[in-house]
Length: 123
Image (tube, rainbow, N blue to C red; front, side, top):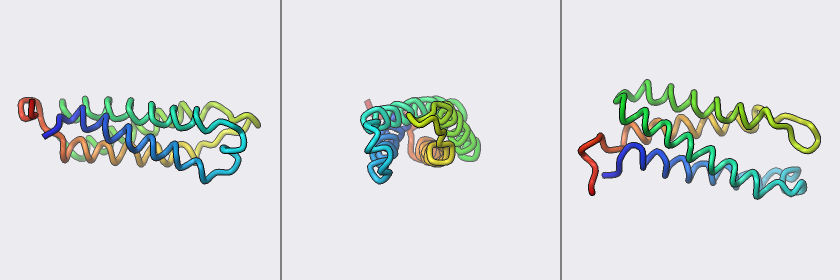
């Protein structure tokens, strides 16, 4: 079984990459040439969320608190990204924060529910 931290990082990276790749469906993002930065940023944001949530899940074994913490971390990191305007000077709070919140919730659930507690991991 994989540790809570490793599982959190893996889930966060996968969901962050998926989040970044989903911007292919936003014509303005593709046209602005920001796709590589968006994909890389979303993946890094997912890895950081996964690591923080995994560390929390290892320390506090509570599904409700894991979900709340994951949601909070996802929202906070997404808010920090949403503060940066696009080339036209617009901010995209909903478009950035909603997927970030969902990412945090899913990673919080996965880490708490499926991650191994310390001492239970496979070597």
